[in-house]
Length: 175
Length: 117
Image (cartoon, rainbow over all chains, first blue to last red; front, side, top):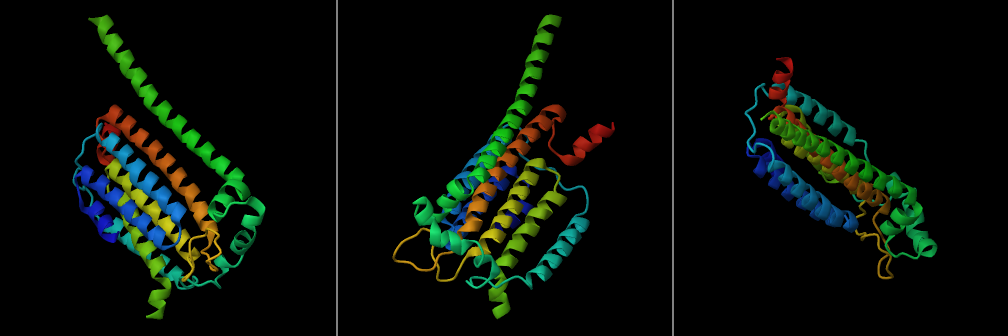
């Protein structure tokens, strides 16, 4: 995964960048299977690696596919990133260790769902039970966000098409 | 050694996060910025999912054969985040297409220069 990210940073060909992004998403999906998040891994493989790669390729059909060389020296961004990384790594020193059951994150709400979700919703898959039943309103909000995003994309692309039609009709009337 | 094993998941997350951040900050090409943004986003998924993993546990689907399950709550949150993330990326790409139509380029610096002229 780290190799894929470094490839994305170094490559100037945008096709290579987009395909490496897809590979990165697939690797992330396999890591998610290893972390027991099978539902998330499925979504990431379908949506992250599939859909966004296809969408990005569609955009690449419309724009130039080579990146211009960097004009500024990359020193300041590197410094900023290094400082951020150092601060974050300092922050991880007090986080709970990996893979333990007695950490606060695994002690509070999750045991309730694991114990009661079959009784209360009848779904053996706890993730589905929480998503559709306990947090149904959350999922409704999520679909609202997607709806808004879709409308935004449609508005942005339709205004440009209308302008182009208008331009061509203007040219027709002037000639 | 035990410290490394205990927090390796956070460090991998941070390396990926910094890679994404560097792409967004240092590169001027907008498609590349979007890829960097999605890399950053995916690293946040990892940050949420990895503390919910319990060693020796299994995926949170109730069965009589298993006793220990990983934490299902981060999975639900991240499912929502993935789908919302795709919506934002799609919106960003629509903006890129519009900028390309208006300026004929998707490089940050060139758009900035045209604005100043």
